[in-house]
Image (cartoon, rainbow, N blue to C red; front, side, top):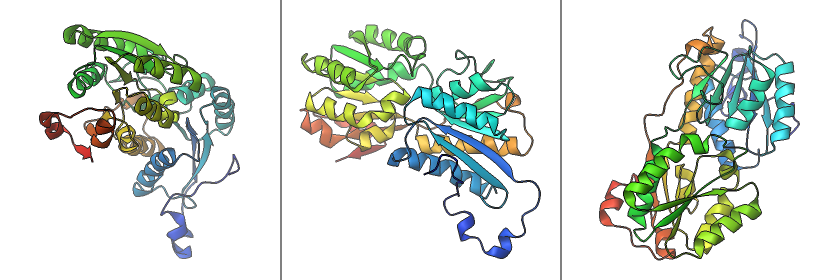
Amino acid sequence: MKRRAFMTFLGGAAAWPLSARAQQSGQIKRIGVLLYGSEGEPQAKDQFAAFTSALARAGWIAGNNVQIEVRWGAGDIKKMQLFAKELVALAPDVIFTAATPPTTAVHSETQTIPTVFVLVVDPVERGFAKSVARPGGNITGVLPFEPSLGGKWLELLTKIAPAVKRFGFMFNPNTAPYAKSYFLPELERAAQALNVQSSSALVQSETEIEAAITSLGTDPKGGLVVVPDSFMLVNRAKIIALAAQNKVPAVYFEPAFAAQGGLVAYGPDFKVLFGLAAGYVDRILRGAKPGDLPIELPTKFQFVINQRTAHAIGLGIPPTLLAEADQVLE
């Protein structure tokens, strides 16, 4: 797809009769979009479709009253920085970013163009907002996780794999610089309460991911907590496969990990979050100021267990835990 390609909403203008499209009134709005993932990733495409569909339901129809300029970062931070410059130069009415690196790139280029983010952890610490309740600047959005989830993930790991006595929490320090300050305190408190040792698994490449998981696999009491990180999302297939190959019990932060073969996941449905972010884009296009819009928190989390994976790595899931799960994949 050409980088400046005009995007049409799924189920949007193409389905409208010509007479309806001819009745457009007012100035066409422009939305800039900078995404972390690749256009060819099915999950990334589904999430973006959730965003555009929510906009369409709010009345923003491509070819009628809005156009979208989309850039896919493909996991390349330098490319995201270049795309951020391009989007800002277009002077859109609002910019939508998905994940911390794209938001950082846009924030470096503009503090005036309204920006809505999703999948950003700790926006206050990153300097995007003055507070969650009143962001105060040009950026607001949807916060996917609270720090307390660190302890929840470890608790689930020890329930599903009671033999675990050492776990690694894995993230990329370049794409998830917030991980230690945001999640680690709760993880360490939970580790102390559960009598489990913790260690950092800092990874910046596929080779380092493989080395970290292979190392955990050499310890029959080893486990893995995958910390929220756009780099983890891009490499989820490799992480899931290596955890299975090395029989490492692992807990993930998004339900899609379990659906794709991960052992257990607890977190929000990202497609829902993209839809919530579209609601903020809608409000800004209608005149709201991002600094006055509180950063939104998810209200629903999904607990998914992949029983096939559990059996494959030799785990028997306690019936009480199966009863707690929102979904059990058999």
